Length: 99
Image (cartoon, rainbow, N blue to C red; front, side, top):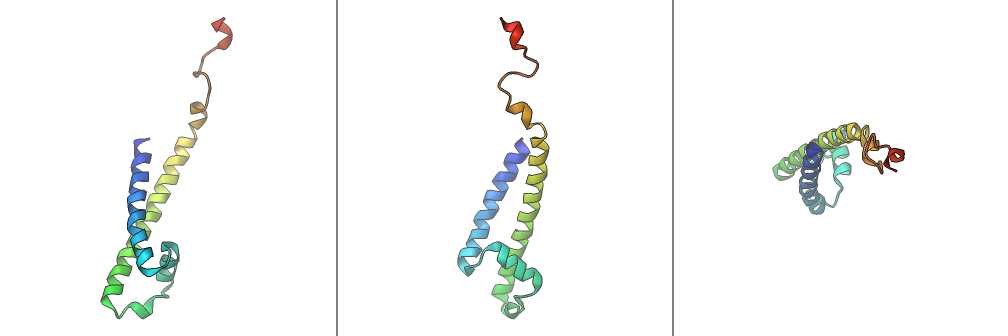
C-alpha cells in the first residue's frame, strides 16, 4: 500500500510540473505530447529555448505515462484483495456462535 501512496505523491508532483508548461504554452500535456511524437513541432526546432523546454516537457509526459501504468498495475493487484476490506465482519467470524 505504501508503494501506491508513493506513486500518487509522485504523480501529484509531476502534474504540478506539467501544469507549468501547460499554462506557459496554453496546451494540455496530452495534446503537446501527441504533437511532439508525431513531429508536428518541427518548426520550433530552430529555437533552442523551445527545443530544450519541449524535450523536458516530453520527458515529463513519458515519466507520467510510466507512473500511471505502475499505479494501475499496483491498484489492480490491490483490487484483487479489496473484497476482504469491504466486509462488515471479520473474516472467519461466525455471527451465529456469538449468541
